[in-house]
Each structure stands twice: as structure tokens, then as C-alpha cells.
Length: 423
Image 1 (cartoon, rainbow, N blue to C red):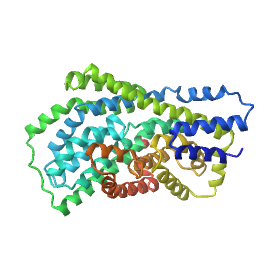
Image 2 (image 1 turned 45 degrees about the vertical axis):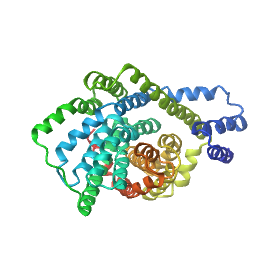
Image 3 (image 1 turned 60 degrees about the horizontal axis):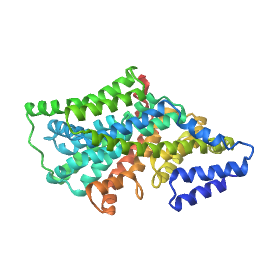
Image 4 (image 1 turned 60 degrees about the vertical axis):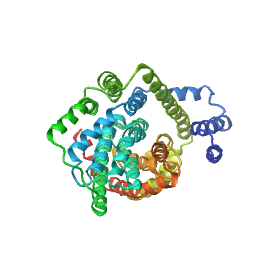
């Protein structure tokens, strides 16, 4: 079967501005009708339903809902204040507080833009007052928000695990190693920047203030502890942990911090439902496309084509492909479309599925920042009200840091495999 017309039609639809799911689904249906008339048309909706009829996939809308609740509440603000009270007096202390807050936030939400919206407006004016430039401040916040993709739980991690039948828990743990390394890299970069620019330090907070800030954030801290502890303690599955995260976020924001009302909760639910609908229809369309590719033996052909390359060379080519595609396609679509095609080739050369998951997630995190269409770029533009090219210029040094992280995760597998080795 010649898939050339399918690829050309899909690219043409994208160029004309069609939604990604339609650009995948319409050419796929036409290909079935043209090249496989013996396959009943009813198979297509059946495959679409089968693609989203998975218990583990239920964790995705639940984590999205929990992230939207957190983004509209007071959890982000209290986390920043608590972390700043402990490290604000250090050189680059406020910048480090931003990084640590985004790391903790990532352990609760799993969605990068949520950290920008929740934490960004709080810390951006404070960074400017302390002497950081606009470019550095925006670049730090936007890039640190990608820690939500690297630190478990992450939506893209769940999609990858479902696509490859890898262990969700081990993929989570592989991302944790990458996230910690990137957080350290950001802290070192911020420290060097503060030293060179002579950024003033804040007064040291007393233990009484630290205790007050910690007490204020205590309920917020309980959320990542219970989610991660529940999953890796064997108490709950990722889906059950996601459901608990929703309930926990509602209770904390409504009854403890009193930032949530029934009307606001309804608005958040509508927004989450819209995001979930977009994502699930992508998964459904991707399932049909994957079925077509399987019948046409495309994964086997790609595996045979790339079988003569070593693991080092194959990972390099995959990284280049993901980086280029990440500039124009959203991360979840990349997982749905590219991973099923490439994964068999990685298995043929002996690349561990969990390690490849960490490499994939690192690529997706870079794509969130990469111009021209990185999602976090536009969230940053809307949040900080800055011109597009100013934000692009601001994040370039941080993209360089992320490329260094990608190289480390790709060619030093111990970074990704350290925590999964204990499971």
C-alpha cells in the first residue's frame, strides 16, 4: 500500500489550518475506502472507541481537571511563599524558589501551562524588583514550567505508556530523574546569572516566618506526597491517584483556602472538559491511523530501514525528528502519531522502553518552548503581555540548557533508569 497520498493529504490539511485530528482522520478514512474496500466501514468507529476505552487513560482528564483547579486557586501562591522563605536569602534565591515551586507544582498538575498561569503572575514582578531582567525572568518562568512535563505525573507520560505498553510507574520514575537534573541545571544557571549581574539577596527569613509559610502551604504539600506515595506505595493506580487529586484539590481550595465557589468550579469543569475532548479525539483519530499503519506494515518497514543503525545513531535521528516536529505540532499529537512508528525500531536495536520514554518526554518538553508554535511561548505572551519575539529571545538560553539535558538523558541512560531500577 502506498501511503504517499495519505501523507500529502495530511500535510495539506495542516497547511490549510485544519485541526490536527481532522488532518489525521479524514485521509485515513479515505485511504481505507480507496485501498482496503473489503474492510467494513464500521471498523473505523469501533477502533476509535477502542482507542479511548482504556482504564489508564481515565487518569488524563482527571489530572487535567485537577491542574485547572490548582491553576485558579491559591496553592501556587502559597508554595512560592513557603519556598522563598527557606532560600530567598541565598544568591539567586528568588530564582531558585521559582524553580523549586515549579518542581513541586509539576508533581501536582502534570501540565506545564498551568504553572505559568498560576505561579508566573506572582513571581514575575518580584523577580523584576530584585534586579532580574525581563528576558531572564520570563525565560526562567516559561522554561521552569516544563518541569511539569518531566516530573510525574504527566499527561504525555501516560499517553506514551499506553502507546508502548510500558509501565506507567516506571515511565513516571524515569521522568523524575530527568526533572531533577533539569531543575539543578536551572538553579546553577540562575546562580551564575545572579553572580555576574550582581543581583541583591533578600533578608533571611526567621524560623517563625518559615513555620508560618510552611503551615500555610501544608495542605498544598500534601497533594504531591499523597499522589506520588499512593502510586509507588502500591496503594493506588495512576487513575485512582488522579481521582484523589481532583477531590483533594477541591477540598483544599474550597474549604481550606476558600478560593473556590460552585460557579467557579463549574467554569473550571467546562474548560477541563473542552481540553479533554480535544485530547481524546486526538487519541481516537491516532488509533485509527495506527491501525492503518499496522495493516500496511509501516512500523515493520521503518524498523527494517533503521535496523542497520546503532542505538546511538538511531537515538540521534529520533531526537532530530522530534525536535523538528515539536516546533509545529503539540506534544500529545507527537506521542500519538510518531511513537507507534518509531518504537519498534528502538526495540530492534535494544533500547529500553522506559529509557526511550524519558528521551521522548524530554523532546516533548523542548517542543513546548520551541518557536514558532511552542504552546508555552503563547501562554507566556498572554500572561506577561510581551511581544512574541521578546519572549522567543528570552527563552533561547533556556532551550540550550534543555538541549544539554536531552543529550544527557539520551546518552547517559543511568539518569533516566536510576529511580525505575528500585521498582
